[in-house]
Every structure is written in structure tokens, then in C-alpha cells.
Length: 510
Image (cartoon, rainbow, N blue to C red):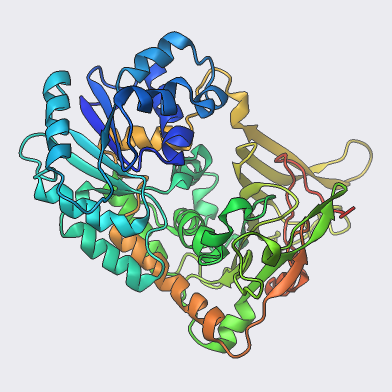
């Protein structure tokens, strides 16, 4: 394990929800696991008027998030961690001279001997990324002559290819690409990382990981909730931007990529970029019409309770055409994946919350047990990303008794069974990696742009196409029936349950 150097974490937008909800619980667990350096401080920065003590009480000492999210949150550990937190009021504008902030950073560095190693975490709207980077640069806080300097930015990274390029150029004007860490919390999940290990450390999988043995690949990301209080934001974004362009494209890149030369950040990210660039971009309306489906959830009754339809949600245009369901069929233009269809869907108001990858293997060319239960049922490798993280293999076994009756059985592994191992939360892993200078799980500029190059034509078609439809689906079912037409032949979507081994049918609306 890399040694974590003495350092300071400077959080912009520190009075917002993300700091208390995600960052502080992650820092607490890292601290308790003895993975923070001895000399480590956090400086919160925002436009709220608070003292150091008030900030500590808000995000650490009196935080309900901390008590809910961490195990064994003893008062001694909480109090000691709180002592590492400080606060600086930036005033009424992020775009102002940062000389006072620079002085506070320097004073804390000298007092706590953080080695002039600084991480700037931008928990702010993307419109402020370049503004903050510029002002930090003007104070020399991007200069690595003494100590390293890193900047972490949250998603969404751009609204389109054009805006993503503009944002990259803006950040790279003031920080080198090697200093920029674009966070995607999905890459911090153990099972996402395990895609690489499953493929490249097991000879039973990697030789089969190609068009000769894989029939198709299916990825489902489902949320049981609606847009809740995010209606105003979501109506300008939609499912394709909110989930597909970043989280799901990251998963696709790990499935599609070629073996890297080694496990270094540079080589893994090089292969991910190549993978995204190999996706067949759909440009003509006929192809887009046949290979994309968008939908919107409608009002319904679930477990005796009426839930709103999307257009009834607060902040949503009553005539909105923003998708809450997006399903895409696409292909990859290289030898490994030629003619293998990928089916990816993401949606809100589904029967359960789940994200999983299903690798469907081809059936044996010669069916010996033609009348068995396994006939027309493929072998499957299911990688569950959330919840109930784990891996499941579906394969044929003989039923005990006379004759050769074959049925499908499960071979499974669950991360929850690793009682002796601490499975890190996504933000714990990503924060620790940034502290140690490991950018493997962070997106590079060309990677972000390659994902947008694939998504942009779909968004443009959905906005301006002449034959585009948006299909309604009742809240609590697995999306519009039109999405079934994407799948070739007799294929059907796998509709997963809360538990990895479950394989239920459609949800019944009461």
C-alpha cells in the first residue's frame, strides 16, 4: 500500500450537503482505519458565515450523517477528528481574490506541517470549477515546486461534448492534467473494480471474453425512487446525462477494454479511452430510432400508496419530454466484440434499486441434452454492483436421480461474506487514492470527451429527431414494453431482484 503523505484537504462548497453526507463519514472511516497521515487537516471553504467551531459542529460533532453511516462512531474518535477541521468564509462570491484564503492555508500548513501538499475538492456547481481554478492559480496554489497540488471535481462534467471540452480547457489552463482528478463514485465501488480482476486474473474468463463465446451483454441500472427534490435539476439533465454518460459508460469501458500492459493508472486509463473510442457512434435517424428507447414514469399505486408521475413532480415542466428511462443498444467496432450487441438501460421508479452487469455466453454448438431444462438457457456471469454486491455464475448441473435431466444452478460469491475484511465505501477509496496520487479510478480528459462523443448524437436525435417518441411506463414496473423491441430474437431483459440470486418477473402494481 502506498504511504499517505502529510497533507491538507481544502473543500470548496463545504457548507453543502455532500461534505456532511459523504466526505466526513469517509474521512472518519479512513481515520479510524489509521489510513490518514499523522499531519492532516481539513479546511472547509464556502460563502456561509461560520467559525471553526460552528463548522465542526455542523459537519462532524452534531452530524446525523456521521452517526448513521459509520460503525462504532465513538465520541473519542469523533472529537479527535473534529479537531482537524477548520473553516474559512470566502464571502459573497467565489470569483474574488483568494489572498486571505491563501494566507489561511499557509498558516495551517506551517502549524501542522502538511508539507505544502494540498488537495482542492470542488463540491460546487461545475460553473465554478474554472473560476476556482483561476483564483487558486493566481495565488500560486497550483505550483508544485514545494509539495504537490491536486484538484478534484465532481460530476456532471459538462452538459455535452462541447461544454466538456470547454471545461477541460478551462481547468487545464491553470492545472496540469496530472493534477486534475474527475471523480465518479461508481469507480470506487468494489465490484466495479472487480471487473478488471475478474477478467485479467482468471484464465477461466479472459480467454472467453470475446465474440467467439459471448452472445450479448446486458447492463441494468435501476432506482426505485423518483426524482424526489431534484426535479428542477433533473428536468434539464435526464437519465442519459445523469447516469449513462458517466457511470454506465465507465462500466462499459471496463468490460470492453483490452488487457493493459500493467496495472498502472496510465496504462489502465489508456485502454479505457481506446475502448470508448471503439464504440460505434450512431448518427443516422434510422439507426437511432431502432436502437434507442426513452420513457417517463407515470403515476401509479405501489404497495397501496399513490406515487406521482414524473410530470407531476416539483420543479418539472408539466409538458416535459425529459427521459427518466433510457435504453440503448450498440456495438463495438473491434475484433474482440464484432457483432456482439450491448444492451444498457437506466431508469427511475423501477421495482427495486439495483445495478448489475450480465455476461450472456453462447450455447454449446452441439446440444447433447436437447430436452433438458438448460435448452435455450445460456450460461451467465452476473456481476452485481449494488446492492448485495457480489458475483453469480449460472450454469447447468444434473438433477439427482435416473437419467440426464439438467437444470440451471447458481455459484455465487458475496462481498458481505468477507466478515474479516473492511469493504471501503466508494468515497473512502477514491479519497484515499487521491491522497496517495493514484488516478486509476479517476476519469481523464480524453476519456470524458470520448464518452460524450458517443452520447451526443443520441441526445441530439432525442431533441430534434422527426420520429422520436417518449413512452410512458407505470411507476414500479421495469420500464416501457417498447424497450423489449431492442433485444434481438427471443431475448428478454433480466429483471433482477434485491438479492443477487433472485430472478423475478415484472412487479405487480397494487
